[in-house]
View 1: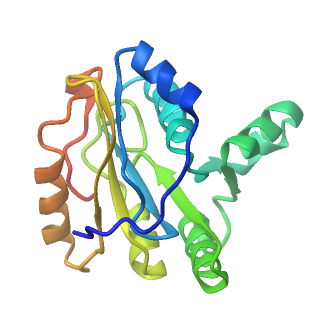
View 2: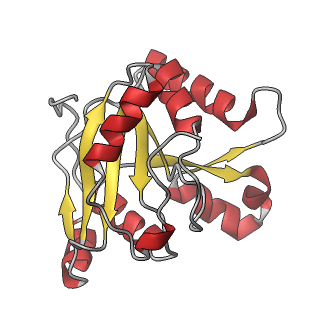
Length: 198
């Protein structure tokens, strides 16, 4: 686990106030690096996205997230997605979305640019069998840390649990993730995928 938080951000007091009015607590005390991968868990309802956006603004973190390239071709909607941090990916290119993101993250590291990719590794609100491994490949091959982010409807808290450098031992890394996120409850707990690799 990475304990230092050298990257400090200034977020929106308005967004934090809205979260408080909704009865939510935001937990964040800095980032472990200027680049990395955020994995948000669990993803069980449509309410996850607006809560995540409020937390993003409350923290002040400009995140990148994946979206199908066709979504970005819709004039107004595409601009809005880009404004939120959307990164269009062409799924049928030789390197695929993961390969594209690895190259983008490596370039950000080489140039000293801020870049955090945020995603829900379950990939769907429906109950899945585990986590898709794209986030793991990006973090491992681009040599950036992983931030475990929780959306806990049981405690009404959202924030960063911890930061990790992946060991390359997938079973060991996932055992740590599963333990850290064991008590987190989504809005629909029965839809949360188990914390295990697919």
